[in-house]
Image 1 (cartoon, rainbow, N blue to C red):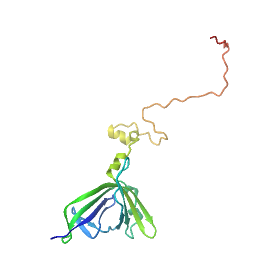
Image 2: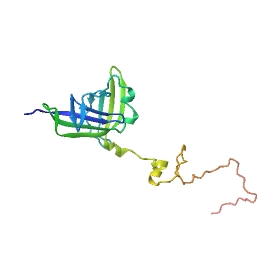
Image 3: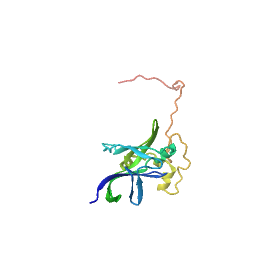
Length: 200
């Protein structure tokens, strides 16, 4: 009788590299090798429990890495990492054969929200990962006031091509609001002006 155990798998698809980690040793899943340490991000220091979102919040978790000693800061944290896909699985594997049995259970499918590198007694990279539902909260305000958006809807439309660098964005084709001019000179009535009493 074979012994079956559980293993956690994590895949983080960054623009610069794909990080595949497991919680011990190494194992193959979907033709890809998952290891306990990555050449850049090192090992997982902690994995905060997944919290459910309430109201306008979405499920999120925090992952902390102990990066490799000679990993450059730019390889560990950069703005381009935001929205990178992150997935977590729980799988069963045959201890004797060292292979996954059955279909791993996908427990989280999200995106990277932010990364932060802290340096103290140890170097740590903390990553905030949120659910893909976060995209539902992204706003597209102002997309209609740029050339690329207009051309994506109306090919060849050039009304916004020269409307760059405006301090106050104004939609193309609209008139500017009327301006009022006030005179500071005193008021003089006309010569034929005569004050008449008010009768009720």
